[in-house]
Image (cartoon, rainbow, N blue to C red):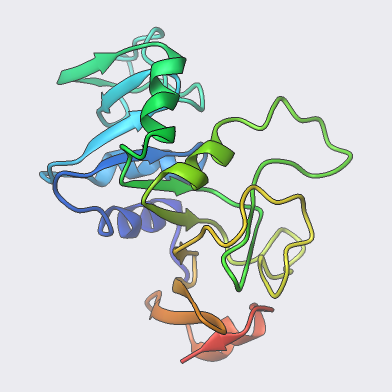
Length: 208
């Protein structure tokens, strides 16, 4: 069976290494905070927080503690707070080892589209463009196909780009893929998912 949102987040957490500073994008990536466990990982939120804990239990929410997606979160004993300018100074200065982001589309060459759909209301581009340009590694978590059943892993993105050739690894509900020369390399399949199912839902070139 395909992975659900929490299983995708748990799989993404396995990518993180001790000592890393990591930014979590809005959507599914925020769930990664619940699966860091005992790893020495420091989570950064671009709204000005370094050292995010997991989501709070019901009734323990603090409305003043939110991530970039406006979800309530918890703090740690080492948590630090600062303004947004300092936060983006960390990102643009190359201090963040990895960013885990959601996406609308990813192309086989690593192009990323995740900030707008033409004709739809857009609140702003957010921090994704800075993140993909400034961090060491970009990991995308997203559903393999859209609501119409169309592949989100494409030969070329059709939506406005967030960054060109910036994605390193993609984790979908069907499996894990690396951006390599010539296409996407299938690294791992979700339990119960078949190669035929992945092939049928992937427009991008797949490399064994």
